[in-house]
Image (cartoon, rainbow, N blue to C red; front, side, top):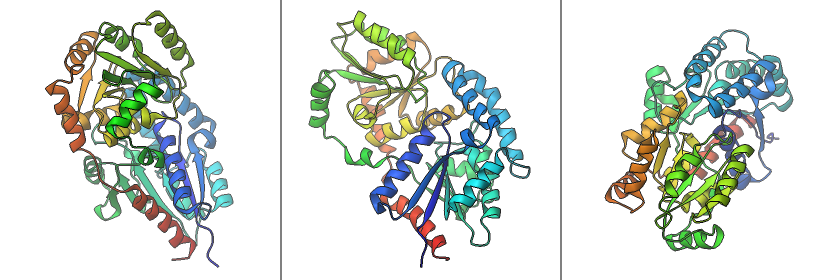
Length: 391
């Protein structure tokens, strides 16, 4: 009798993108096969050891308070990741215990710090039947900020989000025969809730209380909630007849209080405000541009819906965020602002739906991928089934 296929998904809450992809994967498996496949999501860095758990908290504090500090912290993480390929892993006893209890047929790593070393341990613990190990790298491009910890000789398959990311990984040593590309790693509801133009306008008006016609800027943020929303709003509020905003604050309660106060003090300006939103895909579709720090998941949703990006680089960017910015900048599918004057200048052009704005939007649309998520997630399920059947 063939065992029920079991898939272990490795992630961590450094930012929100890795966990979002883990949840998306689980949703797709449930959509395609219900309870026929067992999926376990493991926040490995948080649970494996005290040191890695503290490392996650430091990462998120840096992202929220001082992004430039991550250029130093990034090298520290790189060092620990590289030595873990051959030395004893932090939290290896916890990981081995999880492997023996769950006995996965497939391990899917969605985080750069949960591949190198961990795959080696998994293949050793799960002998003789073995396990298939797959890495999904969510970076948009290569260069400084692309962690070598994404790469390990113990991966059976390495999947990149873009051609540029894959080319860099191959340059660093990944073999071409063990790779593929998949861009649209998004939850099923993203694909199921696409709105036509008239539906987007109706949603703005009826669900968000905004104008159906004004240029709409989405002030986004990651799960941690770092943002410069008030700086943007101070400029937009000067043109209430032409521009309006949607803003989310993640899990940053302090930012939400500040934003709520600003909204009360500026009743003349149209602003839809939320904390941590579960309708991100509807908010992006209701927007003409989205402001982001460089989160890969936010950029992927913006790309899927063809919504131009405005990269906010006040106080600097973390190395990984630069990989996203560099990709869209090279393809002229975004704008970049780092000062109040630059925001004023950009919005002054875009809020009238200028040729510059439309050219940027068309470049974003040109970058869109036609890959089919159902096929990709079914491929992962098939790998697990092959192991479960002993193939």
